[in-house]
Image (tube, rainbow, N blue to C red; front, side, top):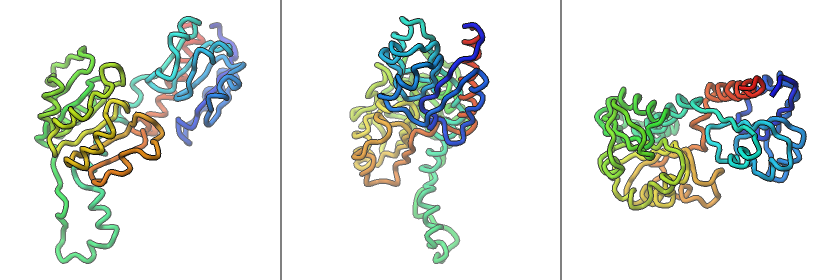
Amino acid sequence: MKEKAIKIVCLDADTLGFDADLNEFAKFGEFVSYPKTAANQTIERLKDADVVISNKVLITDDVMANTNLKLICVSATGVNNIDVEAAKKRGIPVKNVAGYSTNSVAQQAFAGLLMLANNMEYYTSYVSSGEWVKSEIFTNLDRVITELNGKKFGIIGLGTIGKSVANIAKAFGCDVVYYSTSGKNNNNEFKSVSLDELLTQCDIISIHAPLNENTKNLIAKPQLDKLKSSTILMNFGRGGIVDETALANAIDERGIKAVIDVLEKEPMIANHPFLTVKNRQNLILTPHVAWASKEARQTLIKMVVKNIEEFINGK
């Protein structure tokens, strides 16, 4: 595409955060940003756009057929909300961003893990409630604190994020192993094991895999039954990898602990089984925010800008 002023439309700016600076997109021409976009608004809002920026709004074949899009920019790594085959047939490039959130996700994983291992919620509540003031001794040991050092740490999905988590776990003194969901990842630093070995032997399991035919319901009741009762299971990959009803039952019935940032349906449904877990202290649940550090979102926007620049320059 020859360099000229173009119109760019961002369909769901709210997914980039209230503090996101989108002003740089205006340098390309006209820039219009919508906080959110419903499915029945998409075509109208894109009717004279050259470029669309979307995170979760579906860009279907029907949308492409009724607009004149020349570039689809995904403000995320996954392109599952885009009809990629339809875009290919229509000659519309689809550009995503990758690698922007590695540090953010890894940090969030250990934030949740350490909250559980150190029983932080209980101890901060103990102090803020005024109970420490009433204590006759200098400390409180009502909840067990466990060290990460020496624990067997299993990673499901040793991609870029999985490797970052593995290195941090190693720095904590963990014995790190991994299971490759694709069977293609080979790493000389960490031991590759079968899924059964990882589930039965690991004290901590962290999921960093995409959702596909190899990972859908990868961790269901039969797999959860293999975990030690002291296991901490974390999912920072995608909802749908873990059977959420089965996990909720395992938390209550077996004492399994969990750190969950992604769900099969987002936003969370009103009657989700995690909302009625009795052993609430064993569950850290966050609303798909692991990717979203301020620094990660700034990097994401820069990468989308670069994608548009490369498209304009014919790269």
